[in-house]
Length: 71
Image (cartoon, rainbow, N blue to C red; front, side):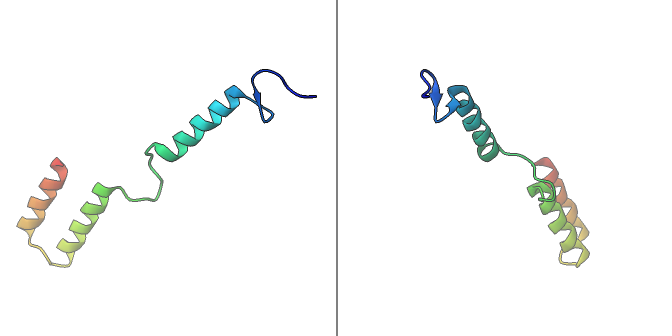
């Protein structure tokens, strides 16, 4: 009726370790989510919009673009 040994709540110890590792992987590791903008891409988009709306000059655009590409 009852399990003896390495059984915890009906699961083997190894399954608990696998579940804990899986949950850690899901919540703690950084990963790319499709549709979510990357910070660098977002910065380029903002820069392009500012240039398109004539808020900055071509010279300022080139300087900022060069800065973003190096960082």
